[in-house]
Image 1: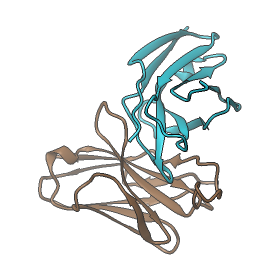
Image 2 (image 1 turned 90 degrees about the horizontal axis):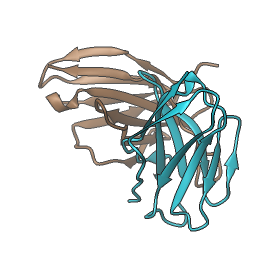
Image 3 (image 1 turned 30 degrees about the horizontal axis):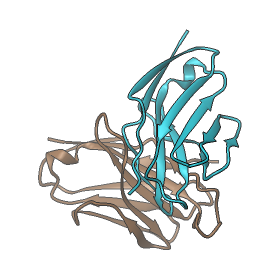
Length: 109
Length: 118
């Protein structure tokens, strides 16, 4: 199964962009990379996913390297409500996700 | 539009007992997945139900079983509870098969049922 490596934690200033790296060097060619976040005491929330091309939606942008070994989630203008654990997740099967420990992101005023 | 709803929100059991957790998927969704999240860890995939059958299963013992009803709601049953079963149990719903192009692949999670085993 593909494994991911993320920083344990990171801080970000409110209003600035937050760049969250993820290494997934063992991911196979057909596995999507998903990003979810989990705000304290809530269920995980979908952010974005991608395979090869960069993706953007109303929440974030996802930059995937050409060799697909790593990706970066970009929150363009972080707010205090973006404080959460962010998970970079390879898809192992049809909607079967493998969550790691994630990155705890703290947005500071 | 109601999202994914789970019940109960909290419960306490003792070792050896059995527990049943319930999940109603988001309106229009037909696939339900269950995850276990121990304190301080990421969610771990237990199993997934589609068309009232278990479609995929993670690395969990047979003490963990489930069911899906014709209205797509689902139950998670855990027998012979152990202290290590204490966790937040999350239900997630989705539509059909992503591999078949029936959906974008987004999972919608409920708020979870927090189980404490004493």
